[in-house]
Image 1 (cartoon, rainbow, N blue to C red):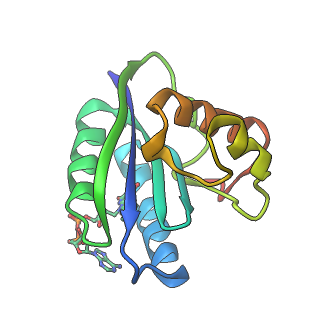
Image 2 (image 1 turned 90 degrees about the horizontal axis):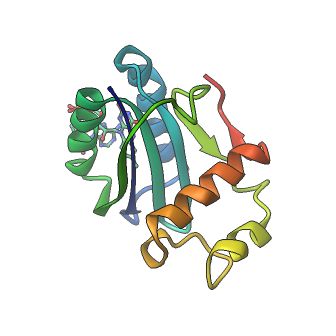
Length: 141
Ligand code: FAD
């Protein structure tokens, strides 16, 4: 049984580029063995992550992530059983914010900043889908 989970959280101020790379390394090292795929977006101190995989594996990872001291205010945005993956190509893709067209953010929210806390989970998922469609995701594999 496959599920897809999306959450948002706020990074601690101590999270810098090096800490981000350490998180991505953890994702890429550990997710393949758990059969987990997904995408991680970080912008303006906010994380937005989609995790896909077996229900037990995704739930176990989410519990570890919630306990992670590098971020706070972890909020579950969407959780659903799925027939197929949307982000099968990424053990953890990352949104290339440098390539991100800010107009895309404006399309889905009141301001051109990433703020999943102020929009519905469905809206954030639509944004992710468009990012994939416009090849704004990097870090294949
Ligand atoms: P341990 O490795 O034993 O770590 C225990 C705690 O130490 C962690 O909860 C964390 O608070 C802290 N910690 C661990 N590593 C570091 C470090 N390098 N620097 C500072 N503190 C650290 N893990 C995945 O496997 N897959 C993912 O997709 C994934 N996505 C994440 C997304 C975000 C936004 C964050 C913040 C973390 C993510 N992690 C991910 C990491 C995850 O939270 C756990 O740290 C990791 O899974 C290891 O779990 P563990 O129980 O073995 O913890």
